[in-house]
Each structure stands twice: as structure tokens, then as C-alpha cells.
Length: 331
Image (cartoon, rainbow, N blue to C red):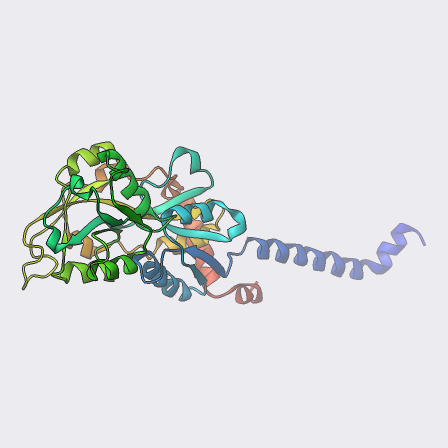
């Protein structure tokens, strides 16, 4: 049978086969471009600010049919390492300002800042007021290995020239540090957390400990551009007990929501929607340096994408909310 005769006698079968192949290819391409239904997010220690924020993201994205698996970590340093390691499966993380550098910026970008994180500095009340010089010979908690608290605390001790003169440096997570401080087992605890942190709220309200400030905060902000100078007003922690009894000058960074650059645009869009910029922080602190006028992060910003890309993300998100099975059924 000649080729012409074959086509003439079997055109309907060939048409069906070609159409089926085209539909299969289109479905394959469509499935390949669909957003994932599950992402992994690096947070911080369980019970800490980052972990609690992660739980809020998990709840918000669950309403969009996206499952968020939370991975507790010591903090920002490890979060960035996991984010840059494709084998970790982590694609979203909360990271403290100042952790990133030009050497470790590739492959990640910021979806924006979320909340202020002061470096709280609590000490036993019987020690009395102290500056950085008063840390000599003291037993100090500076946060776990891999935490942003530890990185910044060590930098401050180095800047003050006393990193070799303290009594003992302990790698405690915030809750353990607070317990040991209240029990009198350590002298000082550095804790990097938002004002909403349960540990911070507990220590601010407890008369057995006292919050120290940074009299040279202006100099620290000049040395470290990712920091902000903030003031905790008198009585803001406990108005009836007048705690703190005077304004306390603190330094604070900003926590950013950071993602892998190859994370699906629709997921990035969903993650950027519930960015809880804490209104409590704005009310709690007197901001002396506006973060809007300063470059707080050296991460590439996902916000620089074009309007057309954002519209495409919204369209993809709408489809995604109803599930890929429904979108295929309606095609």
C-alpha cells in the first residue's frame, strides 16, 4: 500500500493519535509549570519569634492549598546555609539583617522585611547598671551556634575589645537563657527577637532582671548600616509597674523573608501577601532612624519584578487555589 493510500484510509486514526499526543504534551508542560503543593521553611528554635512567625505563614498558605513544613534551626546563619543548599529542600527562610554578604548572596532574594529584632540585653538586677565594659568576667549567653544572636553579640564584644575578657560564653537558646538568668545561674543574656517574643515579654515583666541599653547606639549604627536605633519608652513593658523605669536605647535589625531565586513565582507571590509588618513594633518603639530611608538588606529584591510578572503570578495563583486537577478538568 502506498503512503497516500495509507493516509487516505487511516486519516481518522492518525488524527486521533496526533491530537492525543498534542494533549499529552500540553498536559506535561502544564504540570511541569504548576506551583508545588508543599514547601519547606527554615525558622528558628521552637517557641522563638521565627518559629511562631513560621506557624502563621503555615496557617495562611494552608488556605491556599499549600503545605508548609517548618524546620526548626538555631537561627539566621543556619537558615541562610540551608537556603543556599539545594539538597536541604528549604526554599523559604526568615533571616536577620546583616547575616548576608556579597559572598553568600547568590541564588537567594528577599520578599521584604517582616519585623524589627532588637538585640535585647538582660542582666541580673543585683548587678546594677552596666555598659559593655561591665561584661568583663561575666557569664553570658550569646545564642546558639548558627544563630544571628550569636553572630551579632560576638561582633559587639569584638568591637568593644573585650571578647577575650568575659568570664564564659554560653550557647543557649532564648528560653534556656531566660530560665538560667532568672535562676541566677548566668549574669547576662543577649536575645535577638521581636517585641512579641514570649521570652522577651517574660523578662521585661520580671523584676529579678533588668534591661540594659546601648548608650553608644549612634556609633554602632554608623559602624553597621543594617542596624537601627530604637527606644523602648518608659513604662512600655509594664505600665502599672513603670517598667522599664526609664527610656532604654536599643539597636535593632530587620528580619527578612528570603527565598530561593528558583522558587515558583506563584509561591513567592503567596508568601509575600501575609507579611505581618508588626504594628506592635511600631507602637512599642520610638523609631529614631526610619528604615524606609535606608538600604537594610543586600539581598536582591523580588519586588523589582515587572508589573506584568506580578499579574501573571496572580493569575497562576488563582488557578492554583482550585488545584491542578480542577484546572485540567476545565481545560
